[in-house]
Structure formats: C-alpha cells, structure tokens
Length: 177
Image 1 (tube, rainbow, N blue to C red):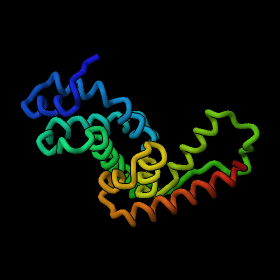
Image 2: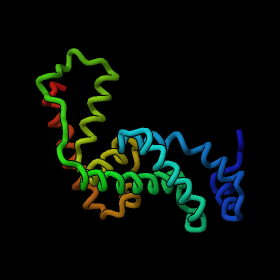
Image 3: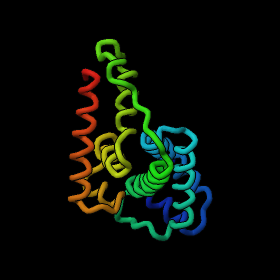
C-alpha cells in the first residue's frame, strides 16, 4: 500500500505526474462511483461522471486547496456532474413511472429489496433535493461540505434536506415501511 498522502500526490499531479493521477484514481474511484451510481441509478452515466471528475482533477489540479480534504473536493466535483445530468434528464423527462404502493408489502421485502426501494424513492426526488439528500444522508457529508459541493446556501441545503427527508418518509410509509 502506498503511504504517500493525497496532498503529496496532488503536489506531484500539479507537476504533471501521471503516476500520481493513477494512484489518486485507484484510491478514490470506488467511492465516487458509489456516489454517482446512487445519484444517477445508471452504471454508464455513473462511470461517465467519475471519468469526468478525474479529467477535471487532472485539468484543474492547481485549483485544489491543500487545506481542504481531497475526498470532499472530488465528491463535490462528482456531485456537480451528477446534478447537471439530473437536471438534463428532468428537462427531457415526460413522465415518471413509479411502482404502485399497493403492489408492495413491506413484510415481503428482504433487506436488498428495501435498499432498492429506498434508492427508487430517492430517485423520484427533484435534482436539488436528491443531491442534498444523497450527500448528507448517504455519503454522510457535513452540512458545510454539502454547501460547498452544491453551491447552495446553508439555508437552502437545510430546506432541501428537510423536504427530501419528509418526501422519502412519506413515500416509504405508502409501502408500509
């Protein structure tokens, strides 16, 4: 295992080190893919978002502030790419197909089915609420980190999170969960 810190790798990356980029990709790609996949619910789009994140890391390495957590910075970039895709989808979406609540009984659901249902429920949220909910509740970022990632004010993040939590709670209640 490489003992080089992310900050040291970023210093090398700023000098054009492709080896540093490869190491950073190896360290961070799985977490970024999980974030993107949870937000986009599509492996291909999630892979694209992660790839765009690392391209941006390469091209904007000089913008990185060593006083900040690199992982949070990368999550911010990735979340913004996903948010852009969600907004694009929303403009092109004609209807939203949801599973009828009467077709699902919570007693019949296994843990993985519950997770799938939760992800489907999150997927129905408007893009801003979805991104805020995902970053705060699933990725466990602090409110300040979500503010940084979304460029929303703290009040906007809190308001979107409040509505998203209530929406998720109400939708899951429809399924008896």
